[in-house]
Figure 1: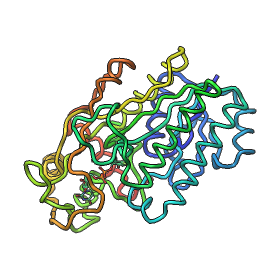
Figure 2: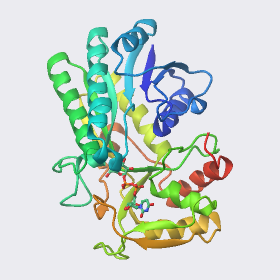
Figure 3: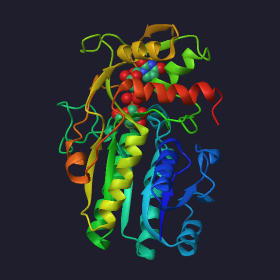
Figure 4: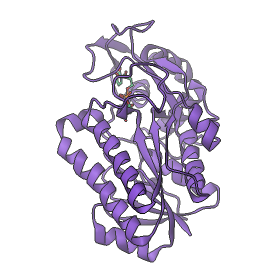
Amino acid sequence: MSILVTGGAGYIGSHCVDVLIEKGYDVVVVDNLQTGHEESLPETVTFYQGDIRDKRFLTQVFEFEKIEGVIHFAANSLVGESVEEPLMYFDNNVYGTQVLADVMREQDVKAIVFSSSAATYGEPKEVPILETAETNPTSPYGETKLMMEKILKWCDNAYGTKFVALRYFNVAGAKLDGTIGEDHNPESHLIPIILQTALGQRDSLKIFGDDYPTPDGTCIRDYVHVLDLAEAHVLAIDYLLKGGESNIFNLGSSVGFSVQAMLEEARKVTGKAIESEVVPRRAGDPSTLVASSEKAKCILGWSPRYTEVDTILSSAWKWHSSHPEGY
Ligand code: UFG
């Protein structure tokens, strides 16, 4: 029996595939390679290039392979882009999940782990954020992730398909040997941008606002290592395959770092000056996002290993400095 990973050639998907293979699972990947990279996949993986919205294609994958459970990453994930192109997000993220859920129902596959997002919360009323906090997305991206969770909730209600939604905070870092890592085009995330500046690919880091109500005025985020995140997916699929009930978990490191603090850490890790300049706030950025991940620790037995920001930064630096142009 195999685990199907949709979007397995993407940044987080490829790290999850790597951990699954390391733990001895048979893995089947579906990815349309819109943003994913086939080079990120190990040779032992069965790879189908195609789109989850193509029901005939997806049905064939389920018919050829013996799929026991699904880990679902395939989605568009840029907050800013989603504001510009909401319909593209509803189509790929929401409709894609609907087709996947439908094929799972037809093929009698009852377990799905799904990559949700802290963006489902919107501007939090309290930090650290608990899973019981109000969900009030401030972008179409966050809205699609919430809608995807709800599709799965009602599928559980009607067909008994069990799901785990993992609400990620700021995912960063790379496999420790630097062979796979983050390669987005365009890049919008803080850590890759800092490291591209360290490599001389950008003139300076633009700090989006230093007038937030935080100690140094820059936004605070909760950075979680991509390998710890990948591990949580494996724990979650095991939990479901052993009969666990549908559930929602935050995944973060529970520690907040400001943009300024990240920049200073990156200067230490890379030994580079890394120029920066303060520019106006980016629309829609909440000032502070820090997760409570106690529930994942307690119920899934998740125990993140790479919680130090210098491990996150140094693994990302290893990847970026050895793959300056990406894959
Ligand atoms: N930032 C800068 N300069 C940059 C890039 C980012 O100052 O060039 C700042 C942002 O303003 C923010 C912080 O760095 O304060 C982190 O920004 P990212 O773009 O790296 O990440 P976000 O917190 O905006 O988004 C992340 C995930 C999203 C998810 C969201 C949940 O990348 O997928 O958390 O709120 F939706």
